Image 1 (spheres, rainbow, N blue to C red):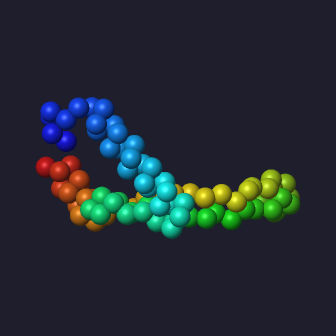
Image 2 (tube, rainbow, N blue to C red):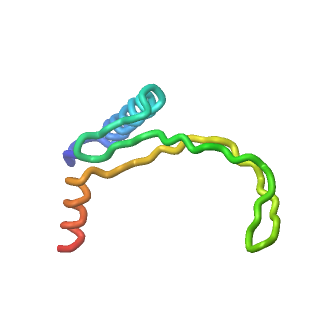
Image 3 (cartoon, rainbow, N blue to C red):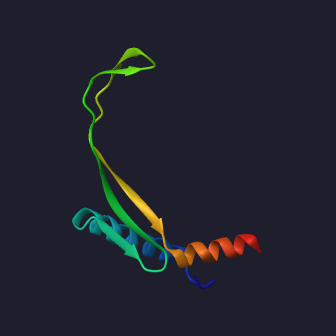
Length: 88
């Protein structure tokens, strides 16, 4: 950002980008910031309660509800530049 840019303007820009990302993730399941990262929603299945054998003993397993995770993958060009800067 330019040094003369007010901090409030920068905060507003980041908040607007966040709102757009959340909206796209809810609607389409993916959001891409070209040259920076790609975000995807991953659905994690739930687990039923019951018993399971562990090291020859039966243990009780608690139920776990299904939930969603956001997976963020950094683009190759950004990762290469960060690694190159770190090695210098």
